[in-house]
Amino acid sequence: MSKPDNRTVTLERTFNAPIELVWEAWTQPEHIANWWGPKGMETKVIEHDFRVGGKWKYTMLMPDGNEFISDGEYLQIVELKKICSSANFRPMTEGVEIQALFEKNGDKTNFTFNVVHPTEEYCKQQEKMGIMNGWGSVFDRLEEFVNPLVK
Image 1 (spheres, rainbow, N blue to C red):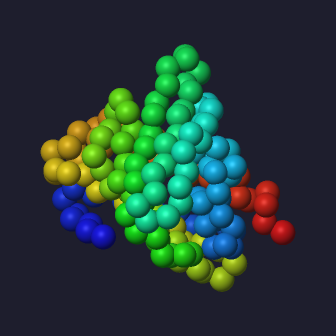
Image 2: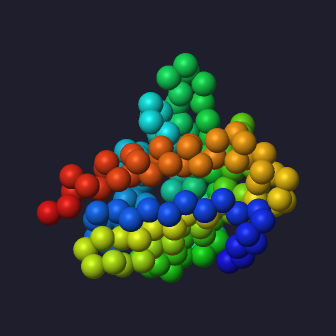
Image 3: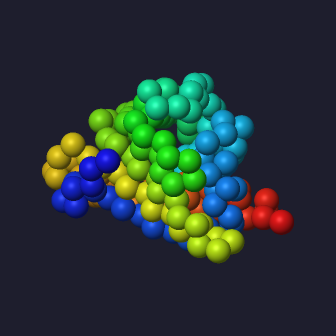
């Protein structure tokens, strides 16, 4: 797992939910369909082979009828700690690595999300296109999804 600072966008969050619940939301296709993608998008899980070397593919339907396709291959999985994957979010982003890092914080979960771009220029271009707001919206949805499940 590499994380060159000049080409990585990092978002951090603390979810008010236990790590097992946040992990399950990230790893179970029936849950992923409920929160993956910015607000207003419907997500369909086309493929989800959750193992190192396994592929994933989701489609996100925009309110205007356009479709985004996100796909990748799992590169590293450490249960309740880390999920690293190659990722494409067509037509906007291609050839990045996403890293979801989970840390237990009592009954909460500290979460760090890295998007590692192939070049510094590509990273800057993605930042200008609103990558922070896009993923921020996704993680808002994840938070809304896991919070009611907390017992």
